[in-house]
Amino acid sequence: MVEGPVHVTYEIVADGTKRRREKLVDSLGYAYNVKERGKVTTYWQCTVRPKGNPCKATVKQTNGEFVPGKNGHSHPANVGALLAAKISTSVKRKAVDQLFKPASAIVEEVLHLSIMFESDRTNDILGTNFDFHCVSNLLSKII
Image (cartoon, rainbow, N blue to C red):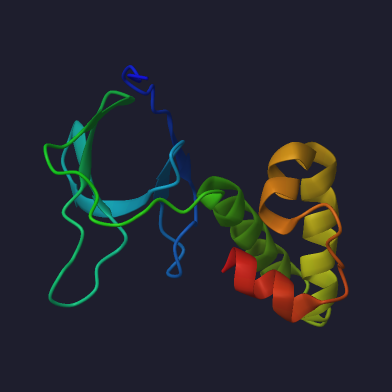
């Protein structure tokens, strides 16, 4: 069976990186950070950047339109990357606002809210029988 071209969508997650910068995530599960920002155009590079063999995939953003670069990814996609970026960002924001609340309580609260709004996609990542009290399991799946 021959598959046609895949329509890829992109979403920018504010404060999505470890240094609280923008992260671009596509619908396939690949993530990008800003490589270069011009007056009208922003160039994004894949976040998989090990020394010696960085992924050369890029995306060009002009006036809200995203165009993939000529190089493909050199690694598999991370299914659920967008949801994981959103959850991680929400946890970080709440932690800054609630300094004395335990991290496990913040993570559990954000996950409960996430599951209420994104139940199908969250279950794909965490599984339907996820135990919210197992924080180490949670952190290994979203960070």
